[in-house]
Length: 317
Length: 89
Image 1 (tube, one colour):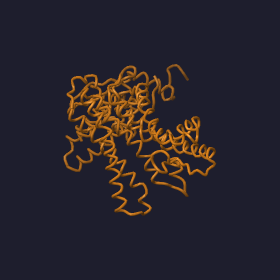
Image 2 (cartoon, rainbow over the protein chains, first blue to last red):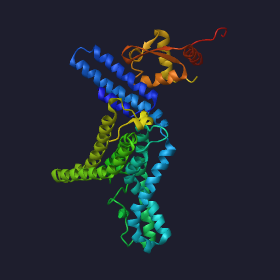
Image 3 (cartoon, one colour):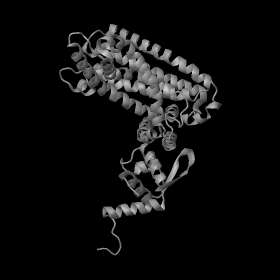
């Protein structure tokens, strides 16, 4: 339980939120000292986990308010826009001669949310993995990123995909076989989250699972990035270089696990979504595990992102 | 001072029972205040000056209502019609 409380402290920046967690921990210690049996201690522990979760949820508003949104948004945009353009240029480039400049730019706009959905975790990492004007709250920024990703993946992508299809139909007369598969993943979200969840005829658990887990993937990048920002210069450089390799390798591992699961499980109706589920869960676990390892190794149990201002005292990797 | 329901309940408990720990307030509220969440509310109330706390043993804090908190509670009760102003019918 001590580890749970210390891990929770790592995710907060606001002093009032930290005090709420500290007092919840003090209550747990007080009650544990009075608990005489093992079952009573277990009950006290479970109650403390619930109390901690409630304290974190109720503190999230204050944590959100501490995020230097303008600075982070500018940095995310500075990474995101070139990567999106780069990704799209190789795929839309071949259409340029058929569509012309204006239509290609329009296609790039309609297909941008697809690219953003996948690139955002990487952009968030590079935006936050260096010191900011104010300490970044992992809880606050994680909530912001998760909401943004959910909105993008659950609504913007399918709506913009539809716009792209209509634009392509107008340009090619519908016979050219142009689909939204130009970017990244085949069939990447043709329905909004609500359509995928509530449509009786075309319910898709794969889309539901992806839409719920992708925001968690994006949010799980934040603790790793905040930890990196607290490193020395050489440590930061090393982590910046290692991140894309680790990210790609974890994606590969998740894909491998998905494939193995598909081979084992077969093609029952319940199989839908398990492949992507495995990939995202591996990615989330890897990012959170790496963040926890980094924070503990560098600063021990006393670590807190508030102390990023003392980053020059922190030993490099 | 704006006084939401949870803050009003905490002030009522503190004014009737005297100073207390967060956990005691949760127990005394009969389930209306929740563990963990109460400290976020108490922190907010301390910022407003409605309660003050003193560190106690084991990292716990003892909370008591301030004079401002008592007045805010009285005002809330008057507005709710629970207390009548002297000299009014």
